[in-house]
Image (cartoon, rainbow, N blue to C red; front, side, top):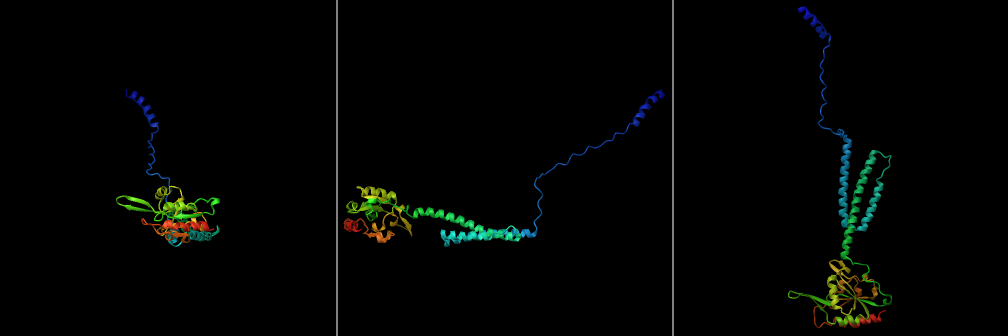
Length: 307
């Protein structure tokens, strides 16, 4: 039995010895996980000391230019009008041309040109902005301080070129407004105003020129002038506001100045053309007032006998 077992086992043992041994290899480890991914390149190295000083100097120059621009505008707003500022602007434009350099200039010359151009262009842009803003403000203010038109009246008919224009103030000349706590505002007609208007309308083109608002002038004229003797009415928007007062500028009436008369209780104080003014006593509600009637002969004589 032992021989039979040996004969069977020996071939198997020999095969197992001739079979090469299987080596175990460890599988390669997976790559390390990336924690932070960035597409930006690594930071550049710090600039050399010379470049850093140049940038600092440029920043200081720009800051100085801005400060100079602010100071220039502040001084210009006090010392110059818009026309003078335009001349200053033209001078700055010439300086900008002087700051330019050619392509073959050195780096230092180009740097100087940049500083010079910045020092000139910043005040220039500031002045341009200031001029535009100032003009817009002045145009807006001019709408309240100057007459609404260069021609306050339409052209006179060719057949009426010889007709004189009689300009009348309203308050204390034709009417008087009074306020009391019991009755509020009331407007009274001056004695003789109806006869005055009706008679002189035959010789004059009559215009009422008041420094009051049109919301006051229009209803008063409509009640006062029932017969249509007054051709035109001018209110506050047709006056010139200056030094706290509203002035009547007769040169804006689109009429021959030698054929214009201005009658007012404050003629010399409210007109820019005193040579055309005819003063009259201001009316303060006196019942025995005859100033308008007394003035009729003089005005009629002027209209008839003056060429």
